[in-house]
Amino acid sequence: MKIFLTGLAISAVMALAAPAQAKDGAFFLKACDAAVRQSDGAQLNLEDSIASLHCAAYISGFREALALHDKINKTAKLYCPPEGGVSNEQVAREFAKFLQNNPNSLSQSGDLSLHIALTKAYPCKAP
Picture 1 (spheres, rainbow, N blue to C red):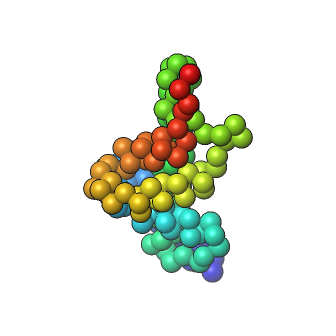
Picture 2: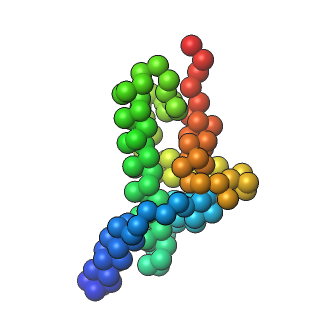
């Protein structure tokens, strides 16, 4: 078990440290579906565990960038989560659901698809 966890950690670091490549919606559907299954208690194989980590890291970074955007540009929020906020796990669920329901977005870039998923799941009300 210790060897497996060590291998998983090394593989995850290598996967996350790999040169940045544009990932499309199809990649994130697989990755975030794995994250949702893991969150629901499923035991994942090594490939799906790495994919799950990729989804979680991507969502976390994306949301941090949106938070920075909101601090700089106080007048134009890009999405409006509920008052108590939402977890990265919930965002992964929304993202996977959006990709499943919108097959055309599977060939779009992950950043565009996640942006659309968030604005549909958590729209801002007009002032």
